[in-house]
Image (cartoon, rainbow, N blue to C red; front, side, top):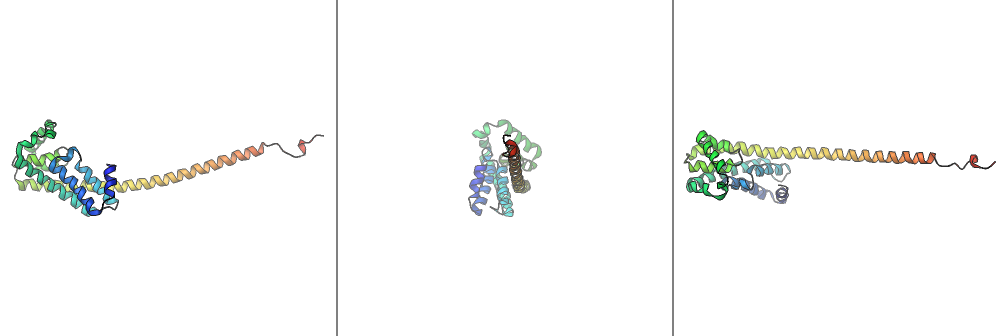
Length: 213
């Protein structure tokens, strides 16, 4: 996460939008949630917007559009490739979760597209299963847009406000550290002064009390 953030900070604005949008799109269209969760990309985009590397409004728009288009691409992949998708290695390893996603579509119908948007494993899987089941695209698109807007706006703003909170905490910690250092220096000087004063009181006097009668 930190490595990706540091890398994106060195990029220009349009490239930041392209990278974040590409991460969201590929997760939804190509099952990349196994490697890069889409919410991580959305939160990261919001965080970079707070850092001034991008516009918050444009970042929200990019994330929402990438989410909607990614789900639409996943729908078309499922519609054209069909059950062959379920025989791919990543999905064979998660047969139980795939079965749960299929059951969700059977029970909830198109609403499963909206619900699945907020579940990490289901997010890239449900659109393809919806296409595979021949769900009417208009109905799919309606719930796809609802979920994409709610998810995209929510997670991008989460990253933005998390960045604001981090900055406030960082500033507070900086002030506390400065105060702590000042207190330590003051205490050190006070201890040094008291020890020096005591040592002078115990030094032998050179006055007349020290001469022989």
